[in-house]
Length: 115
Length: 116
Image 1: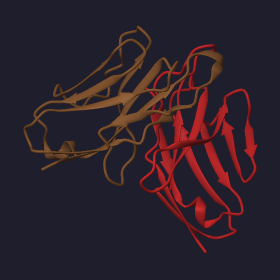
Image 2 (image 1 turned 90 degrees about the horizontal axis):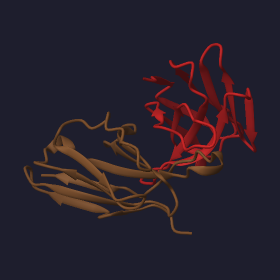
Image 3 (image 1 turned 180 degrees about the horizontal axis):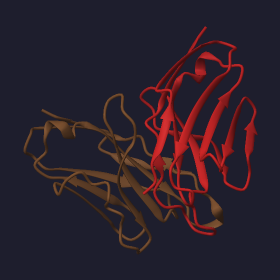
Image 4 (image 1 turned 60 degrees about the vertical axis):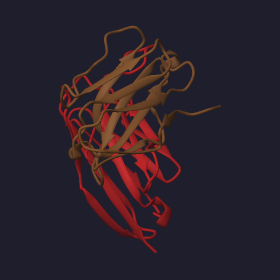
């Protein structure tokens, strides 16, 4: 079946502009995660959605970052007033709720470049 | 919250040798420990995981061991091949029964290079 998809695959924006990144999780996966990965670095947790529960926003680096999720489907990560340090690959992942299946399936990522 | 430390940050081995990557965690409640492999320019993918009710799990050339008392777990790759070259991430979390897990706490990653 279809995996996690993300769009756009690449985004170049000018410093100070807002950007919106999209994630389409695997159908039926109730959990959705956003991570940031700077070049050559590890996976930095940003936010986690689980069903209708309040999201875990503990990883968002500043109030310029926000994310929404529509039910158990699409999620958008918005970065306002982008800065050069926001340049990174933004990865989305989803996982299944039932059956004790814990694997996180990652999308291909959106490479964001802030000039 | 949980804190996962991973060592070494880089590891170079000759083809055919074994590679070992070690992680420690801080929260004794964590009960699920996956390992992800990320090839250059690709997305991370799960290669093996272990739950706290077992001490070791094997899948062909890879194995993971867990020491709950010491709060550390390790990835072992035997008979390494050039295609094993990648960044490997360990992670830990508390996974509730019958429910999806919460956030994964990742280590910083280990760049493994296997020389032919």
